[in-house]
Image (tube, rainbow, N blue to C red; front, side, top):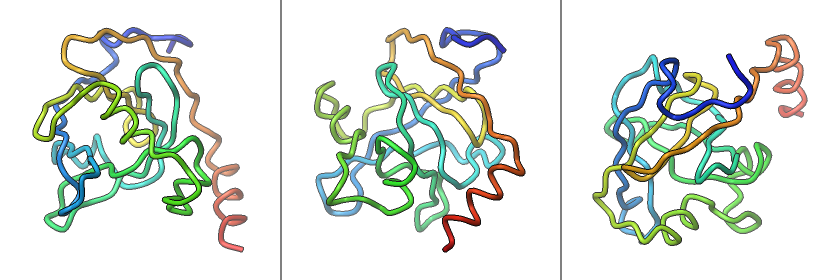
Length: 146
């Protein structure tokens, strides 16, 4: 796969996501299609307006995949850094003057690893983030548990 890839490249699946309220708060969340092979739970790379961030793919109470927050790095995502990190999803939502209930494009660059979100009609080019060697990822996870 090339280092940079256009959103309409044949290797990228594009699906529809929906911006919704997280509970009764005014915080946005991204609700994804219920396709477990495309959206397994975990910390992933997420691109918003061609900027790379990290996010956690979770499940809602009814089992739908969703993203509630996007941060600058994986440490902030793992810590759930509401106080110490800027939620880039909220920032992107506000900067693009989006509304709840709005559909957006979700580009699946690499399922379970790298995704991108863009407004309908917007074009984007993504930097492909290589997946880490699994043994190195296992070591990193072990260090996080300490």
